Image 1 (spheres, rainbow, N blue to C red):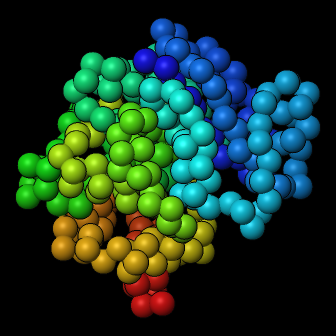
Image 2: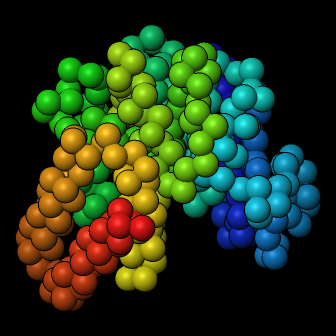
Image 3: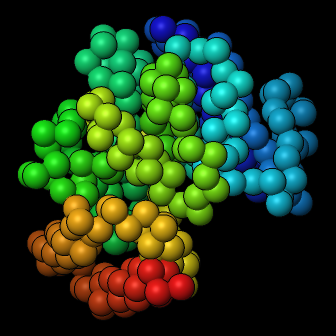
Length: 281
């Protein structure tokens, strides 16, 4: 099956050269286009793209939208599979893409997402472990009672969607979503009796070292998303957060990471308060 890769860029000078090189190294895949969408920025990204003859589209800051920018690019594609990535993933395996799209090519599922690992020894290392375990799983409507909100967990940091299904379900419904556009579409997939596969053999590194303020801001946006899509609450948004906190605490204690133990309550509080504030706004 043919593949179009869509990747929004912003202040990407530290990422774009190696990212592009790693995509070109992917084996046994039919990549039709790599679509970079650069939001106007003031770093050296555009020069790097031009110097390396990398094709891109540029948009104004006010025109960027997590959902609509991706949706518009997907609508222009005539590939069989749409692959979304973010600029800050690191791809070290030349089979990453093949392993990601293989379940769609085999007709087993209509969407897939990669395993994400962190290169940092911070709390994110453990949240990644919880959300991206070492065992693959296929999720469908019948799993909702058992998995709750995690049934709709899906990440377009590295994901693939069958184009005709994406189109049939009307993409992101032309909504300007501030965050979690991937979960929004995953919900539509599952509720329309399609299947999603988490592919643990398709691995990327996706690492952050967020400040507490950055965590708070991200979770405030997440809270806004859940307020706008309150139908998701019945699947256990609170339970999902509690489960994650318990997992992280157990891993910190097991590895005797006492400095992280000091950070832990503040990190979780930033998430909790940010989510509550976002839902309140």
